[in-house]
Image (cartoon, rainbow, N blue to C red; front, side, top):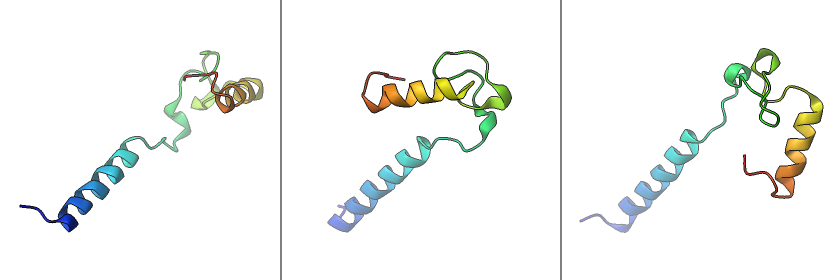
Length: 67
């Protein structure tokens, strides 16, 4: 039978595993399409231009974009 310390360690490990699995890659070549307009992006950046980036962030700020 596991004690409270073992259960806490398992809980922390699950949280760390989840965080690592959901980490956004730092490598810019990850993206092939713009996250906003779905057009091809230069050099794999997440957005094709500043307008798309600003619009995407504005929509996410107000919860209007579920991307």
